[in-house]
Length: 232
Image 1 (tube, helix red, strand yellow):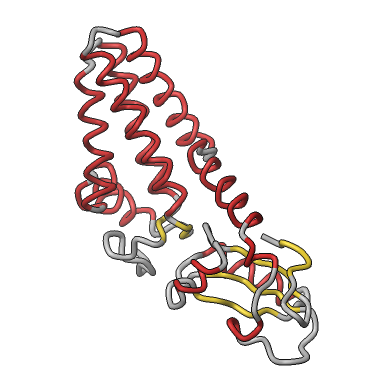
Image 2 (cartoon, rainbow, N blue to C red):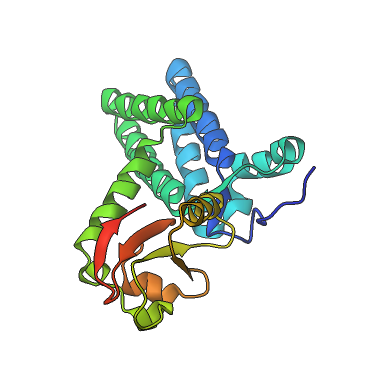
């Protein structure tokens, strides 16, 4: 196995992009099994798994441990992505599965199974195609927050180290372990763009100041720091 760039249980800012799909395959399959067998308490166990993973870390998430200990050593580490979108998707799964469990416990089985099948369908869709509805909701929200954030309309050159009198520059908010971030930076530099990177791991204060909800985020700015285009 090739050496891991990110520790699966400690580097929580990023995640192997295949890990969420594996988790979604497990959750989607078990939610479907619960429906087919009529054993609704299984929905509560799935919700509990989400809750433990989100609050105590990936070591408490059984599908996560299965992926990192059994699958990843054989396939190698996949591309690393920002972990916030899959984490948000898991939060949605927790809420819906909890609602399904409570509805079933209250005797509202039609509602409970409808919610369970919704989770199963969306999770299996994500596992098979890579399209994660919860992740896309998070990314859309992050983009809207960023566009609406007053500071993102201008980046203070002093904050990011843009020299006085510099021409058009791309400011890219990045993370050292994010595969997509490295790809974007390389593409921009190959295109002849001047790029200044801001490591959100080292400068979380700037990530907060400029409302960066996900990496990579890249904007073109003029000499005064005014944002002229959003590139990613």
